Length: 562
Image (cartoon, rainbow, N blue to C red; front, side, top):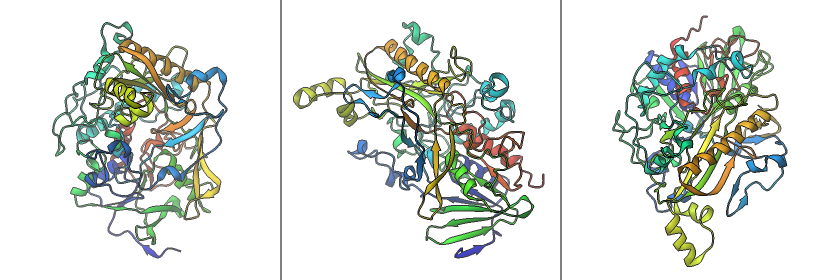
């Protein structure tokens, strides 16, 4: 039984999860004049205290996962690796195959439970969805169509870009804009400029352009311009990166209408009569169980495409016997993971690849769903040297330069800063063997079943990975790389940052979980505003901008009586 049962007289809405979608939702609610309570299971990070880029051992300090969220995810057994695809296995020229087994292995779901969520850890790419990727079922017979069009979403993209301060070019070949971006594009680093080698036919054909980034190219809205330390993924000490807590949530708090409670773990939602969610049960920072009575007030779930379905599936009772919002049986289905391939090599020149922004240029040439010959679903390419953690001397000593002693020292001096890596991220399409469910035996410390990831790569996914590998090698060799030293990807590992689709939106209540306004088809005060509502993944676009645009739109169109 709860230690404390509370009504919610001082709040008009509750938001669960303070990541990209949750912070945007809170801001939109406050903008509407509503009082908002935000519950976040993770802590609030203090950049100067928690991130360690200024220390001499910075390279030994990955992003600090204080909740150890990786350990709250379990995995089903994955598929057997086939000999014909050995060329897709992850390897390093010093250490050999990284997966020595004959089966695909779990590596990680890179998810941050904290105020700001995974935007604290992300590379700050700020992409719009390719409109051609929003009609995958109608045009290609796969995935599902979006019940909201790009044209309807475009004004909300503009709002998000202004709030986060997106830097980038004002023209892109894969999507149109009604307004210019608020900040100019960042200057391309010397290392990335090698990808734009106009003397190479393969490079010229890639149509590289400056990436759109939630990183200010000049001071913006109280944040400084980027200092180009090339370590976005370790946590931004400098304070320039547009994390959700420094943008949307900051503005929500400034209204005086928003209260954030960190360290509050939601255990379940209680379904009640008249198609209303009646209560939220959570454990607060003092380990007390508290039940909030909603009294028809809206609740917005933003736990991500893995933990949102978990919360819905464990929230079952006589009114919701299959789990909250699961009348269609689609909660946890249509799971789409990150498909990627990454190749690194040694450039013939000292290019200083340890400096800059992790992904300052991008190629959308193969982003459209029909852009890859013989494959449904596109991909994009960008430099990934920093994301591969090949921007410091320790990584060079372990993965780039072989040997030891004085020869090793001289080789380190010669080769440091010469590694150039390129990665492709591709479309992930649903299949019946890839889904999210609850583990039948394992539970968390509260006795609640852990979430379980079921993942299977079908033939089309493997073809897409194969294309990305071939193209990455082609790009690097055309840029002046003389020796490939490392390759890794998702053929032999589950390794996801961007995940989608487990509570997909749609017009038909029989085949989807929420409608075009991100509201449950049945439960009148239940909304989901994270990437779990995506009907398709897109061809490698980073999802935060789309998550935030959908969240703002959901609040603007909210009608609890309809």
